[in-house]
Length: 264
Picture 1 (cartoon, helix red, strand yellow):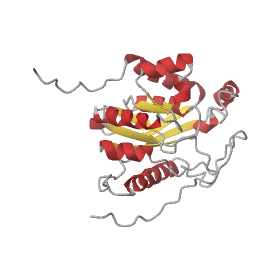
Picture 2: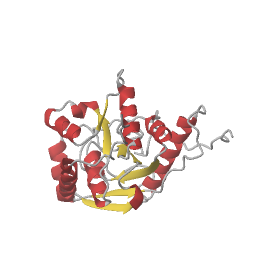
Picture 3: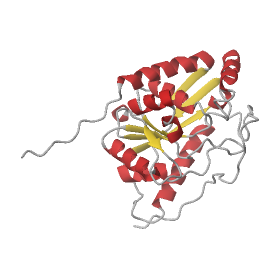
Picture 4: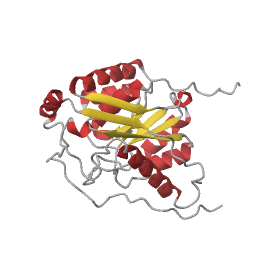
């Protein structure tokens, strides 16, 4: 009996490509999109991990539009609530996105699925913070280890994707107030900035060594913070736009630390 050959690499469904074009149009209708940095041409089809900061409910739309400009169609790791929505959930499944049911017994399944996806050659987009950040200054929070464990298990390149300005398009509590926020943004047309940074250096970390995932997480959040600093030089401490519906939580504030030597 012949041994089956390797599966062909995953290819983004046409629906997902179409929705990226639609996202580009939607963002253009309410804001000016500025995308800087790039994804190395050899990695645009994967294997690749995009690690993005999370500041607004409309981040997935902004990132879909930004990725379209760089000819990347990532599979997004998204909360299970989106998949339970009748129309949106069906579209998410059809586009190949990965469901994450946080705080459930099946949460680990999402990581296994993401590792398999990246290993098979996909581009996967993940939010290392695990939620819309609540840092008072809207800087990246101390991350969860999921993105780091995905990177260490797959050994795929990690590119930080910093974004700034999407918090001006929709309130934290969206969909409540979403239409009003988009209408206001359409009149003001704020600039939404997205930057694809240089790869995060993780090659020296051994996943079998205790603490490797925490170190990798710190490096990813550091890279996101550095990339974000370049997008908001005139807002170094607090954002000018303040959403009164957004709670503030400083308990997960990220602090850059000097790492101890990596065991040889």
